[in-house]
Length: 160
Length: 415
Image (cartoon, rainbow over all chains, first blue to last red; front, side, top):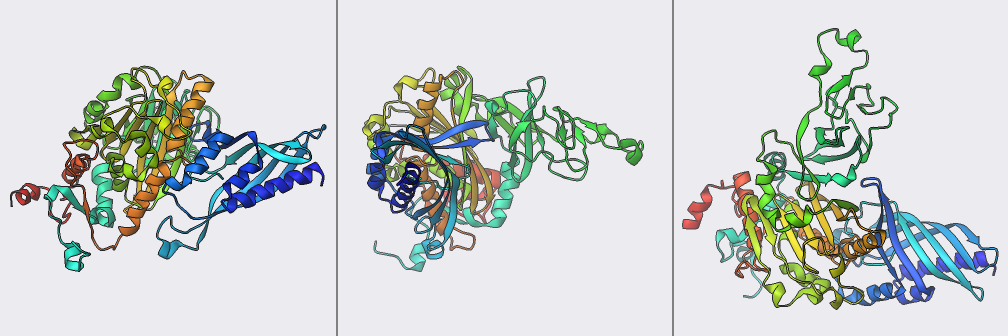
Protein backbone atom coordinates (compact mmCIF):
# COMPACT_ATOMS: atom_id res chain seq x y z
CA UNK A 1 0.00 0.00 0.00
CA UNK A 2 1.42 3.43 -0.88
CA UNK A 3 1.82 6.10 1.81
CA UNK A 4 -1.19 8.18 0.72
CA UNK A 5 -3.43 5.13 0.78
CA UNK A 6 -2.08 4.18 4.21
CA UNK A 7 -2.89 7.67 5.48
CA UNK A 8 -6.45 7.38 4.15
CA UNK A 9 -6.83 4.03 5.84
CA UNK A 10 -5.50 5.39 9.16
CA UNK A 11 -8.09 8.21 9.06
CA UNK A 12 -10.81 5.68 8.29
CA UNK A 13 -9.69 3.43 11.10
CA UNK A 14 -9.62 6.38 13.54
CA UNK A 15 -13.18 7.22 12.51
CA UNK A 16 -14.38 3.70 13.25
CA UNK A 17 -12.59 3.50 16.60
CA UNK A 18 -13.95 6.87 17.71
CA UNK A 19 -17.47 5.95 16.55
CA UNK A 20 -17.23 2.68 18.47
CA UNK A 21 -15.85 4.48 21.54
CA UNK A 22 -12.73 2.30 21.39
CA UNK A 23 -10.78 5.20 22.81
CA UNK A 24 -7.59 3.28 23.57
CA UNK A 25 -7.55 1.67 20.12
CA UNK A 26 -7.81 5.20 18.74
CA UNK A 27 -4.87 6.35 20.84
CA UNK A 28 -2.87 3.35 19.64
CA UNK A 29 -2.97 4.99 16.20
CA UNK A 30 -1.26 8.04 17.71
CA UNK A 31 2.39 8.77 18.49
CA UNK A 32 3.64 9.40 22.03
CA UNK A 33 4.01 13.07 21.12
CA UNK A 34 0.49 13.23 19.66
CA UNK A 35 -1.36 16.52 20.11
CA UNK A 36 -5.13 16.93 19.84
CA UNK A 37 -7.18 20.11 19.59
CA UNK A 38 -10.75 21.17 18.85
CA UNK A 39 -10.75 24.69 17.43
CA UNK A 40 -13.13 27.14 15.86
CA UNK A 41 -12.88 30.69 14.61
CA UNK A 42 -15.48 32.96 16.16
CA UNK A 43 -16.60 35.90 14.02
CA UNK A 44 -18.57 37.03 17.08
CA UNK A 45 -15.43 37.82 19.06
CA UNK A 46 -12.95 37.79 16.13
CA UNK A 47 -10.85 35.14 17.84
CA UNK A 48 -9.45 31.77 16.86
CA UNK A 49 -10.67 29.68 19.78
CA UNK A 50 -9.40 26.44 21.23
CA UNK A 51 -12.32 24.53 22.73
CA UNK A 52 -10.18 21.61 23.94
CA UNK A 53 -6.54 20.68 23.55
CA UNK A 54 -3.95 18.39 25.02
CA UNK A 55 -1.18 15.90 24.47
CA UNK A 56 -1.50 12.16 24.45
CA UNK A 57 -1.23 11.94 28.25
CA UNK A 58 -4.01 14.53 28.62
CA UNK A 59 -6.23 12.51 26.32
CA UNK A 60 -5.44 9.32 28.23
CA UNK A 61 -6.48 11.01 31.50
CA UNK A 62 -9.62 12.40 29.89
CA UNK A 63 -10.60 8.94 28.60
CA UNK A 64 -9.74 7.21 31.86
CA UNK A 65 -11.99 9.54 33.86
CA UNK A 66 -14.98 9.42 31.49
CA UNK A 67 -16.80 6.75 33.56
CA UNK A 68 -16.67 9.03 36.61
CA UNK A 69 -18.54 11.79 34.81
CA UNK A 70 -22.21 12.11 34.06
CA UNK A 71 -22.57 12.32 30.33
CA UNK A 72 -24.95 12.23 27.40
CA UNK A 73 -24.54 8.67 26.14
CA UNK A 74 -26.03 9.38 22.70
CA UNK A 75 -23.55 7.76 20.28
CA UNK A 76 -21.79 9.84 17.67
CA UNK A 77 -20.94 8.82 14.14
CA UNK A 78 -18.40 10.69 12.10
CA UNK A 79 -18.84 10.86 8.35
CA UNK A 80 -15.29 11.51 7.24
CA UNK A 81 -14.32 12.33 3.68
CA UNK A 82 -10.58 12.57 3.07
CA UNK A 83 -10.13 15.53 0.74
CA UNK A 84 -6.35 15.81 0.34
CA UNK A 85 -3.29 13.79 1.34
CA UNK A 86 0.16 15.26 0.89
CA UNK A 87 3.16 13.03 1.54
CA UNK A 88 6.57 14.72 1.94
CA UNK A 89 9.14 13.98 -0.72
CA UNK A 90 11.19 11.89 1.69
CA UNK A 91 8.12 9.84 2.59
CA UNK A 92 8.55 10.41 6.33
CA UNK A 93 5.66 12.77 7.03
CA UNK A 94 2.21 13.45 5.63
CA UNK A 95 -0.64 15.89 6.06
CA UNK A 96 -4.29 15.20 5.34
CA UNK A 97 -7.38 17.34 5.31
CA UNK A 98 -10.79 15.69 5.66
CA UNK A 99 -14.27 17.10 5.86
CA UNK A 100 -16.29 15.64 8.72
CA UNK A 101 -19.93 15.74 9.76
CA UNK A 102 -20.72 14.31 13.17
CA UNK A 103 -24.21 12.98 13.80
CA UNK A 104 -25.60 12.38 17.26
CA UNK A 105 -27.95 9.43 17.66
CA UNK A 106 -30.11 10.41 20.60
CA UNK A 107 -30.29 8.03 23.50
CA UNK A 108 -30.53 9.65 26.93
CA UNK A 109 -29.72 13.30 26.42
CA UNK A 110 -33.25 14.66 26.66
CA UNK A 111 -36.56 12.81 26.88
CA UNK A 112 -35.56 9.35 25.71
CA UNK A 113 -39.19 8.24 25.33
CA UNK A 114 -39.64 10.78 22.56
CA UNK A 115 -36.15 11.48 21.27
CA UNK A 116 -34.20 8.21 21.44
CA UNK A 117 -33.51 6.82 18.00
CA UNK A 118 -33.45 10.22 16.32
CA UNK A 119 -30.24 11.26 14.57
CA UNK A 120 -29.27 14.90 14.55
CA UNK A 121 -26.45 16.77 12.93
CA UNK A 122 -24.17 17.64 15.83
CA UNK A 123 -20.93 19.04 14.44
CA UNK A 124 -19.54 20.09 11.08
CA UNK A 125 -15.93 20.80 10.32
CA UNK A 126 -12.62 19.45 9.15
CA UNK A 127 -9.94 17.13 10.44
CA UNK A 128 -6.48 18.51 9.79
CA UNK A 129 -4.16 15.58 10.49
CA UNK A 130 -0.40 15.28 10.54
CA UNK A 131 1.34 11.92 10.39
CA UNK A 132 4.77 10.47 10.87
CA UNK A 133 5.29 7.44 8.66
CA UNK A 134 7.15 4.77 10.63
CA UNK A 135 8.13 1.66 8.65
CA UNK A 136 5.33 2.30 6.22
CA UNK A 137 2.73 2.85 8.97
CA UNK A 138 1.33 6.37 9.43
CA UNK A 139 0.90 7.40 13.07
CA UNK A 140 -1.02 10.50 14.04
CA UNK A 141 1.18 13.21 15.53
CA UNK A 142 -1.41 15.96 15.39
CA UNK A 143 -5.16 16.17 14.91
CA UNK A 144 -6.92 19.50 14.74
CA UNK A 145 -10.69 19.29 14.65
CA UNK A 146 -11.72 22.60 13.16
CA UNK A 147 -15.40 23.20 13.76
CA UNK A 148 -17.78 25.53 12.02
CA UNK A 149 -20.18 25.28 14.95
CA UNK A 150 -20.20 27.79 17.74
CA UNK A 151 -23.67 26.83 18.81
CA UNK A 152 -22.87 23.59 20.59
CA UNK A 153 -25.86 23.14 22.91
CA UNK A 154 -25.05 20.52 25.52
CA UNK A 155 -21.59 19.83 24.10
CA UNK A 156 -19.84 16.51 24.70
CA UNK A 157 -17.34 14.78 26.96
CA UNK A 158 -15.90 12.72 24.13
CA UNK A 159 -13.05 13.27 21.69
CA UNK A 160 -14.47 14.16 18.29
CA UNK B 1 -42.49 7.88 53.49
CA UNK B 2 -43.12 5.35 50.73
CA UNK B 3 -43.95 6.42 47.20
CA UNK B 4 -46.92 8.79 47.26
CA UNK B 5 -50.32 8.81 45.64
CA UNK B 6 -51.45 11.74 43.49
CA UNK B 7 -52.87 13.80 46.33
CA UNK B 8 -49.76 13.30 48.42
CA UNK B 9 -47.54 14.00 45.42
CA UNK B 10 -49.28 17.30 44.64
CA UNK B 11 -49.64 18.48 48.24
CA UNK B 12 -47.56 21.40 49.45
CA UNK B 13 -44.34 20.33 51.17
CA UNK B 14 -43.97 20.75 54.96
CA UNK B 15 -41.73 23.78 54.51
CA UNK B 16 -42.21 27.51 54.76
CA UNK B 17 -43.92 29.07 51.75
CA UNK B 18 -40.66 30.72 50.69
CA UNK B 19 -38.86 27.38 50.50
CA UNK B 20 -40.44 25.99 47.36
CA UNK B 21 -41.96 27.24 44.15
CA UNK B 22 -44.74 26.18 41.81
CA UNK B 23 -43.28 24.95 38.51
CA UNK B 24 -45.90 26.89 36.55
CA UNK B 25 -43.50 29.82 36.76
CA UNK B 26 -41.23 27.75 34.48
CA UNK B 27 -43.87 26.53 32.08
CA UNK B 28 -46.65 29.05 31.50
CA UNK B 29 -46.50 31.09 28.32
CA UNK B 30 -48.35 34.03 29.89
CA UNK B 31 -45.85 34.23 32.74
CA UNK B 32 -42.98 34.08 30.27
CA UNK B 33 -44.42 36.95 28.23
CA UNK B 34 -44.91 38.94 31.40
CA UNK B 35 -41.28 38.31 32.39
CA UNK B 36 -40.10 39.75 29.08
CA UNK B 37 -42.06 42.95 29.68
CA UNK B 38 -41.63 43.38 33.42
CA UNK B 39 -38.10 42.06 33.93
CA UNK B 40 -35.97 41.73 30.80
CA UNK B 41 -37.07 45.06 29.32
CA UNK B 42 -36.27 46.78 32.62
CA UNK B 43 -32.99 45.31 33.86
CA UNK B 44 -29.32 45.73 32.94
CA UNK B 45 -28.03 43.00 30.62
CA UNK B 46 -24.28 42.44 29.94
CA UNK B 47 -24.51 42.01 26.17
CA UNK B 48 -20.82 41.73 25.28
CA UNK B 49 -17.34 42.81 26.34
CA UNK B 50 -15.55 45.94 25.21
CA UNK B 51 -12.75 43.78 23.72
CA UNK B 52 -15.26 42.49 21.15
CA UNK B 53 -15.34 45.94 19.56
CA UNK B 54 -11.79 47.22 20.10
CA UNK B 55 -11.61 49.80 17.29
CA UNK B 56 -13.77 52.78 16.31
CA UNK B 57 -16.66 51.68 14.06
CA UNK B 58 -16.53 48.08 15.38
CA UNK B 59 -19.95 46.68 16.25
CA UNK B 60 -21.73 43.73 17.84
CA UNK B 61 -25.36 42.77 17.52
CA UNK B 62 -27.53 41.03 20.08
CA UNK B 63 -31.11 40.97 21.29
CA UNK B 64 -32.90 41.58 24.56
CA UNK B 65 -36.46 40.39 25.09
CA UNK B 66 -36.78 39.81 21.32
CA UNK B 67 -35.69 43.38 20.54
CA UNK B 68 -32.67 43.47 18.19
CA UNK B 69 -29.82 45.60 19.49
CA UNK B 70 -26.67 46.95 17.85
CA UNK B 71 -23.70 48.11 19.90
CA UNK B 72 -20.99 50.18 18.24
CA UNK B 73 -17.86 52.07 19.14
CA UNK B 74 -17.84 55.60 17.79
CA UNK B 75 -14.90 57.58 16.42
CA UNK B 76 -14.90 59.25 19.86
CA UNK B 77 -14.24 55.76 21.32
CA UNK B 78 -17.57 55.79 23.16
CA UNK B 79 -19.59 52.58 23.03
CA UNK B 80 -23.29 53.17 22.38
CA UNK B 81 -26.30 50.92 21.90
CA UNK B 82 -29.35 51.31 19.69
CA UNK B 83 -32.31 49.26 18.63
CA UNK B 84 -31.10 47.52 15.50
CA UNK B 85 -34.21 48.61 13.63
CA UNK B 86 -34.53 50.99 10.71
CA UNK B 87 -37.10 53.71 11.52
CA UNK B 88 -38.25 53.64 7.88
CA UNK B 89 -39.78 50.20 7.33
CA UNK B 90 -38.68 48.18 10.33
CA UNK B 91 -35.86 46.27 8.63
CA UNK B 92 -33.08 44.99 10.87
CA UNK B 93 -30.19 47.33 10.05
CA UNK B 94 -27.14 45.19 10.71
CA UNK B 95 -27.47 41.47 10.09
CA UNK B 96 -23.98 40.26 11.04
CA UNK B 97 -23.08 39.24 14.60
CA UNK B 98 -19.99 41.46 14.58
CA UNK B 99 -17.83 43.50 12.25
CA UNK B 100 -16.88 47.05 11.37
CA UNK B 101 -18.84 49.93 9.90
CA UNK B 102 -15.54 51.39 8.71
CA UNK B 103 -15.88 49.55 5.41
CA UNK B 104 -18.59 50.43 2.86
CA UNK B 105 -21.54 48.11 2.37
CA UNK B 106 -23.28 47.31 -0.93
CA UNK B 107 -26.06 49.80 -0.10
CA UNK B 108 -24.09 52.35 1.87
CA UNK B 109 -21.03 54.43 2.63
CA UNK B 110 -18.08 53.81 4.97
CA UNK B 111 -18.48 54.85 8.62
CA UNK B 112 -22.24 54.51 8.48
CA UNK B 113 -24.82 52.03 9.69
CA UNK B 114 -26.75 51.41 6.51
CA UNK B 115 -30.10 49.74 6.14
CA UNK B 116 -29.61 47.61 3.04
CA UNK B 117 -33.30 47.78 2.12
CA UNK B 118 -33.62 51.46 1.09
CA UNK B 119 -30.11 52.77 1.89
CA UNK B 120 -30.99 54.97 4.85
CA UNK B 121 -27.79 55.69 6.75
CA UNK B 122 -26.98 56.48 10.40
CA UNK B 123 -23.83 57.62 12.17
CA UNK B 124 -22.30 56.07 15.29
CA UNK B 125 -24.41 58.33 17.52
CA UNK B 126 -27.63 57.08 15.93
CA UNK B 127 -28.29 60.23 13.91
CA UNK B 128 -29.91 59.68 10.55
CA UNK B 129 -27.47 61.23 8.07
CA UNK B 130 -28.87 60.12 4.73
CA UNK B 131 -32.32 59.38 3.37
CA UNK B 132 -32.20 58.29 -0.24
CA UNK B 133 -34.16 60.68 -2.52
CA UNK B 134 -35.29 62.52 0.61
CA UNK B 135 -36.63 65.73 -0.97
CA UNK B 136 -38.35 63.92 -3.81
CA UNK B 137 -40.30 61.69 -1.47
CA UNK B 138 -40.84 63.66 1.69
CA UNK B 139 -40.42 67.29 0.47
CA UNK B 140 -40.19 69.11 3.83
CA UNK B 141 -42.71 66.93 5.67
CA UNK B 142 -40.16 64.58 7.23
CA UNK B 143 -36.56 65.47 8.00
CA UNK B 144 -33.56 63.34 8.92
CA UNK B 145 -33.78 64.82 12.43
CA UNK B 146 -37.15 63.09 12.81
CA UNK B 147 -35.89 59.58 12.07
CA UNK B 148 -32.88 58.93 14.28
CA UNK B 149 -32.34 55.51 15.80
CA UNK B 150 -33.79 54.50 19.15
CA UNK B 151 -30.88 54.94 21.58
CA UNK B 152 -30.58 52.63 24.56
CA UNK B 153 -28.98 53.06 27.96
CA UNK B 154 -25.47 51.66 27.69
CA UNK B 155 -22.52 51.57 30.09
CA UNK B 156 -19.13 49.86 30.13
CA UNK B 157 -18.45 48.67 33.66
CA UNK B 158 -17.28 45.93 36.01
CA UNK B 159 -14.26 44.72 34.06
CA UNK B 160 -15.18 46.17 30.67
CA UNK B 161 -18.51 44.46 30.11
CA UNK B 162 -21.01 46.36 27.98
CA UNK B 163 -24.35 46.66 29.74
CA UNK B 164 -27.56 47.67 28.02
CA UNK B 165 -30.98 48.49 29.45
CA UNK B 166 -34.08 48.87 27.28
CA UNK B 167 -35.66 51.11 29.92
CA UNK B 168 -34.94 54.82 29.48
CA UNK B 169 -35.04 55.47 33.22
CA UNK B 170 -33.47 52.54 35.01
CA UNK B 171 -31.74 52.50 38.37
CA UNK B 172 -28.08 53.32 37.74
CA UNK B 173 -25.87 50.34 36.90
CA UNK B 174 -23.73 51.08 39.94
CA UNK B 175 -26.77 50.98 42.19
CA UNK B 176 -28.03 47.88 40.40
CA UNK B 177 -24.94 45.68 40.72
CA UNK B 178 -22.14 47.61 42.42
CA UNK B 179 -22.37 45.87 45.78
CA UNK B 180 -22.15 42.25 44.56
CA UNK B 181 -19.23 43.22 42.32
CA UNK B 182 -17.38 44.70 45.29
CA UNK B 183 -15.65 41.38 46.03
CA UNK B 184 -13.99 41.40 42.59
CA UNK B 185 -14.01 45.07 41.65
CA UNK B 186 -10.31 45.63 42.37
CA UNK B 187 -9.42 42.46 40.47
CA UNK B 188 -11.59 43.14 37.43
CA UNK B 189 -10.53 46.76 37.16
CA UNK B 190 -6.80 46.25 37.72
CA UNK B 191 -6.10 46.01 33.99
CA UNK B 192 -8.05 45.48 30.75
CA UNK B 193 -9.57 42.07 30.11
CA UNK B 194 -10.04 40.31 26.79
CA UNK B 195 -12.52 37.69 25.59
CA UNK B 196 -10.90 34.48 24.34
CA UNK B 197 -13.88 32.14 24.32
CA UNK B 198 -17.42 32.29 23.00
CA UNK B 199 -20.02 29.67 22.30
CA UNK B 200 -23.76 29.31 22.57
CA UNK B 201 -26.09 26.66 23.84
CA UNK B 202 -29.79 26.44 23.15
CA UNK B 203 -31.41 24.11 25.65
CA UNK B 204 -35.01 23.16 26.32
CA UNK B 205 -35.40 24.55 29.80
CA UNK B 206 -36.48 27.70 31.58
CA UNK B 207 -33.92 30.46 32.10
CA UNK B 208 -34.52 30.52 35.84
CA UNK B 209 -33.53 26.87 36.13
CA UNK B 210 -30.19 27.69 34.52
CA UNK B 211 -29.70 30.60 36.89
CA UNK B 212 -30.60 28.32 39.80
CA UNK B 213 -27.81 25.98 38.74
CA UNK B 214 -25.37 28.87 38.84
CA UNK B 215 -26.72 29.95 42.24
CA UNK B 216 -26.74 26.64 44.09
CA UNK B 217 -23.68 24.51 44.71
CA UNK B 218 -25.52 21.53 46.19
CA UNK B 219 -25.41 20.16 42.64
CA UNK B 220 -21.62 19.78 42.97
CA UNK B 221 -22.49 16.17 43.72
CA UNK B 222 -23.11 15.91 39.98
CA UNK B 223 -19.55 17.03 39.17
CA UNK B 224 -16.78 14.51 39.85
CA UNK B 225 -14.28 17.29 39.20
CA UNK B 226 -15.74 19.56 41.88
CA UNK B 227 -16.01 16.76 44.41
CA UNK B 228 -12.36 15.75 44.17
CA UNK B 229 -10.98 19.28 43.90
CA UNK B 230 -13.29 20.92 46.38
CA UNK B 231 -15.12 18.94 49.02
CA UNK B 232 -13.28 19.94 52.20
CA UNK B 233 -13.96 22.08 55.28
CA UNK B 234 -13.11 25.33 53.51
CA UNK B 235 -15.51 24.47 50.67
CA UNK B 236 -18.40 23.75 53.03
CA UNK B 237 -17.73 27.01 54.88
CA UNK B 238 -18.13 29.16 51.73
CA UNK B 239 -20.75 31.81 52.31
CA UNK B 240 -23.76 32.32 50.09
CA UNK B 241 -24.45 36.03 50.46
CA UNK B 242 -27.57 37.88 49.29
CA UNK B 243 -27.57 41.42 47.91
CA UNK B 244 -30.22 43.94 47.04
CA UNK B 245 -31.98 43.49 43.66
CA UNK B 246 -31.94 39.69 43.84
CA UNK B 247 -28.20 39.21 43.35
CA UNK B 248 -26.02 36.76 45.26
CA UNK B 249 -22.32 36.14 45.73
CA UNK B 250 -20.81 32.80 46.65
CA UNK B 251 -17.61 33.37 48.61
CA UNK B 252 -14.27 31.94 47.73
CA UNK B 253 -11.95 29.18 48.91
CA UNK B 254 -8.82 27.53 47.57
CA UNK B 255 -9.52 24.85 44.96
CA UNK B 256 -7.16 21.86 44.76
CA UNK B 257 -7.06 21.47 40.99
CA UNK B 258 -4.18 19.00 41.09
CA UNK B 259 -6.47 16.47 42.79
CA UNK B 260 -8.12 15.87 39.39
CA UNK B 261 -5.89 13.64 37.26
CA UNK B 262 -4.29 15.58 34.45
CA UNK B 263 -5.11 19.01 35.89
CA UNK B 264 -2.68 21.47 37.41
CA UNK B 265 -2.68 24.28 39.94
CA UNK B 266 -3.77 27.63 38.51
CA UNK B 267 -1.85 29.63 41.09
CA UNK B 268 0.69 31.16 38.72
CA UNK B 269 -1.95 32.82 36.58
CA UNK B 270 -4.26 34.14 39.29
CA UNK B 271 -6.10 37.31 38.36
CA UNK B 272 -4.65 40.47 39.96
CA UNK B 273 -4.99 40.92 43.73
CA UNK B 274 -6.30 37.38 44.28
CA UNK B 275 -4.69 34.67 46.40
CA UNK B 276 -3.97 31.47 44.40
CA UNK B 277 -6.70 29.16 43.07
CA UNK B 278 -9.67 31.15 44.35
CA UNK B 279 -13.21 30.72 43.08
CA UNK B 280 -15.72 33.55 43.25
CA UNK B 281 -19.24 33.48 41.84
CA UNK B 282 -21.46 36.50 41.27
CA UNK B 283 -25.04 35.77 40.19
CA UNK B 284 -27.08 38.72 39.02
CA UNK B 285 -30.84 38.88 38.70
CA UNK B 286 -32.45 37.91 36.37
CA UNK B 287 -29.92 35.42 34.96
CA UNK B 288 -26.35 36.61 34.52
CA UNK B 289 -23.33 34.95 36.01
CA UNK B 290 -19.71 35.97 36.55
CA UNK B 291 -17.57 33.07 37.62
CA UNK B 292 -13.88 33.54 38.38
CA UNK B 293 -11.83 30.42 38.91
CA UNK B 294 -8.49 32.02 39.72
CA UNK B 295 -6.97 32.18 36.27
CA UNK B 296 -10.02 32.57 34.02
CA UNK B 297 -13.27 34.48 34.14
CA UNK B 298 -16.48 33.09 32.72
CA UNK B 299 -19.60 35.12 32.01
CA UNK B 300 -22.98 33.56 31.14
CA UNK B 301 -25.72 35.65 29.58
CA UNK B 302 -29.21 34.23 29.21
CA UNK B 303 -31.57 35.04 26.36
CA UNK B 304 -34.90 33.36 27.12
CA UNK B 305 -36.58 32.19 23.92
CA UNK B 306 -39.71 30.71 25.46
CA UNK B 307 -40.89 29.23 28.75
CA UNK B 308 -39.03 26.04 27.88
CA UNK B 309 -36.33 27.31 25.55
CA UNK B 310 -33.21 29.19 26.47
CA UNK B 311 -30.10 30.45 24.74
CA UNK B 312 -27.02 30.84 26.90
CA UNK B 313 -23.94 32.67 25.65
CA UNK B 314 -20.71 31.63 27.33
CA UNK B 315 -17.68 33.90 27.35
CA UNK B 316 -14.23 33.26 28.74
CA UNK B 317 -11.85 36.09 29.55
CA UNK B 318 -8.21 36.58 30.47
CA UNK B 319 -5.95 39.58 30.82
CA UNK B 320 -5.39 41.62 27.68
CA UNK B 321 -1.67 41.74 28.59
CA UNK B 322 -1.32 37.93 28.53
CA UNK B 323 1.66 36.48 26.73
CA UNK B 324 0.77 33.91 24.06
CA UNK B 325 1.80 31.09 26.39
CA UNK B 326 -0.14 32.44 29.38
CA UNK B 327 -3.20 32.98 27.23
CA UNK B 328 -3.13 29.39 26.02
CA UNK B 329 -2.81 28.16 29.59
CA UNK B 330 -5.77 30.30 30.67
CA UNK B 331 -7.79 28.95 27.76
CA UNK B 332 -6.95 25.40 28.84
CA UNK B 333 -7.94 26.18 32.42
CA UNK B 334 -11.23 27.71 31.28
CA UNK B 335 -12.21 25.16 28.69
CA UNK B 336 -11.13 21.98 30.47
CA UNK B 337 -13.98 22.69 32.91
CA UNK B 338 -16.30 25.16 31.21
CA UNK B 339 -15.79 24.69 27.50
CA UNK B 340 -18.31 22.83 25.33
CA UNK B 341 -16.07 19.76 25.64
CA UNK B 342 -15.09 20.46 29.26
CA UNK B 343 -15.76 18.37 32.34
CA UNK B 344 -18.48 20.40 34.09
CA UNK B 345 -20.50 22.43 31.60
CA UNK B 346 -21.83 19.37 29.75
CA UNK B 347 -23.07 17.97 33.07
CA UNK B 348 -24.73 21.26 34.06
CA UNK B 349 -26.54 21.46 30.74
CA UNK B 350 -27.74 17.86 30.94
CA UNK B 351 -29.04 18.70 34.41
CA UNK B 352 -31.11 21.72 33.43
CA UNK B 353 -32.38 20.07 30.27
CA UNK B 354 -33.50 17.16 32.41
CA UNK B 355 -35.50 19.62 34.50
CA UNK B 356 -36.91 21.10 31.32
CA UNK B 357 -38.01 17.63 30.25
CA UNK B 358 -40.23 17.22 33.33
CA UNK B 359 -41.46 20.82 33.33
CA UNK B 360 -42.89 21.72 29.93
CA UNK B 361 -45.89 23.84 29.07
CA UNK B 362 -48.85 21.70 30.08
CA UNK B 363 -46.93 19.53 32.55
CA UNK B 364 -48.59 18.85 35.86
CA UNK B 365 -47.38 21.56 38.24
CA UNK B 366 -44.54 20.43 40.47
CA UNK B 367 -43.30 21.72 43.79
CA UNK B 368 -39.64 22.50 43.34
CA UNK B 369 -37.76 22.78 46.62
CA UNK B 370 -35.12 25.24 47.71
CA UNK B 371 -35.46 24.77 51.41
CA UNK B 372 -31.96 23.77 52.53
CA UNK B 373 -30.88 25.81 55.54
CA UNK B 374 -27.18 25.57 56.38
CA UNK B 375 -26.30 28.88 57.99
CA UNK B 376 -26.06 30.54 54.56
CA UNK B 377 -23.09 28.42 53.53
CA UNK B 378 -22.41 26.77 50.20
CA UNK B 379 -25.21 24.17 50.20
CA UNK B 380 -27.76 26.47 51.83
CA UNK B 381 -30.36 27.37 49.19
CA UNK B 382 -30.79 30.90 50.51
CA UNK B 383 -29.50 32.29 47.22
CA UNK B 384 -32.40 30.81 45.28
CA UNK B 385 -34.89 31.90 47.94
CA UNK B 386 -33.53 35.43 47.68
CA UNK B 387 -33.76 35.31 43.88
CA UNK B 388 -37.39 34.14 43.86
CA UNK B 389 -38.34 36.74 46.42
CA UNK B 390 -37.04 39.35 43.99
CA UNK B 391 -38.78 37.63 41.08
CA UNK B 392 -42.06 37.79 43.00
CA UNK B 393 -41.59 41.49 43.61
CA UNK B 394 -40.93 42.28 39.91
CA UNK B 395 -43.77 40.07 38.71
CA UNK B 396 -46.19 40.77 41.54
CA UNK B 397 -46.80 37.05 41.71
CA UNK B 398 -46.14 34.55 44.45
CA UNK B 399 -43.41 32.13 43.30
CA UNK B 400 -45.14 29.24 45.09
CA UNK B 401 -48.59 30.19 43.81
CA UNK B 402 -48.30 32.48 40.79
CA UNK B 403 -52.05 33.11 40.70
CA UNK B 404 -51.69 35.09 43.91
CA UNK B 405 -50.21 38.59 43.99
CA UNK B 406 -46.93 39.13 45.76
CA UNK B 407 -48.46 41.31 48.45
CA UNK B 408 -50.26 38.25 49.74
CA UNK B 409 -46.99 36.68 50.74
CA UNK B 410 -46.78 38.28 54.14
CA UNK B 411 -50.36 37.34 54.86
CA UNK B 412 -49.68 33.72 53.92
CA UNK B 413 -46.53 33.63 56.03
CA UNK B 414 -48.54 34.88 58.99
CA UNK B 415 -51.20 32.20 58.58
